[in-house]
Length: 271
Image 1 (tube, rainbow, N blue to C red):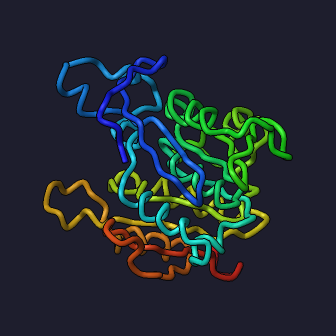
Image 2: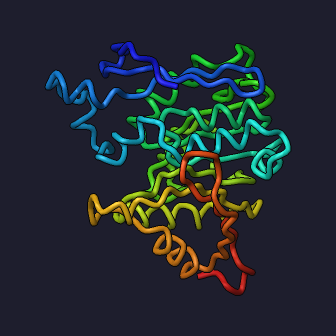
């Protein structure tokens, strides 16, 4: 739930808090208050950042696909909980960090990633605010959160996952170590499909051959804009890149999101 009282963060943007309690552990993050900027005419403080665009801006809120996965994680017996428990997870498009922090509470070690502006101005502060204090066994930048741990690092889908500059900025938290790739409603624009799929496939080819758990909220049929990516088009792109896509069906009770699991085919089927 979001608080009704906006805050102005040290980073200079107006925010509201979002809270949830998972298995007795409260998680509180700040998300960007998009309505406040519209009302008072103030300039988005990140507007001129090179890596900041409309997708990054809307990533600073919490969307239905994230809430659906958080709801699934609340059940220790759910398929999602079993998949993530004890696993090294890389979350793409982590935004506020709410989902990644909840996954850590549920026992995963989660590297939460986004573009550098979102990491430094929102994701890292939200991680610090929810850390339990003691460093996790993996060392910096990992922090203990509930039964697991979390870290925040930049990962721009328009750059290679093994780009030396990106790896250097992650302080040793290598996304290629993933056992699970987690993504919640972060590929909603058509322009995002190609770089997102490229990034996921690169991670799936990592040494631990992870699978990708993706929640997707169909928006292309809403009629608001032709810029929205259709779920069928996203899954077709994965299939064209040598992936198998398994649909697990609707997830969550009121969030209209669908859960998919994406894996690479045999080595002979990779592109």
